[in-house]
Length: 120
Image 1 (cartoon, helix red, strand yellow):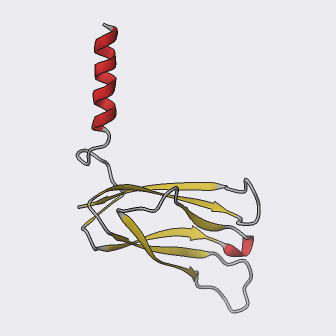
Image 2 (spheres, one colour):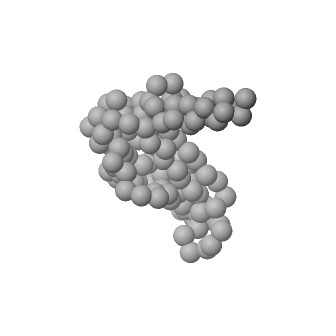
Image 3 (cartoon, helix red, strand yellow):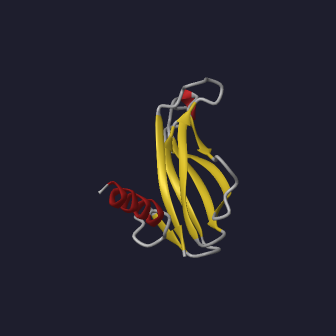
């Protein structure tokens, strides 16, 4: 019985690494670009940061820009969107992790976004 449970556990662990059945937030082709738009308000000091634990062989960052929402002239504290552009380099599945934080303050993360990207 114990041996059967170990075998089932091992099979389930190895099957998680396949691309079949992965629920992706974005499905793109190799060499295709895509954008991730995140609500932001840098006037508060908070900004989105892409958390990379290692260089990715599957996804590469192309650019990151900020677009302020339309507002009356001289209006203070207006938010907007950070637009991150990425490109699929190789076939596979990658999870992008973003933290909304103040870069100069430790433990200032107030939100985390995780997006699963599948490159075909």
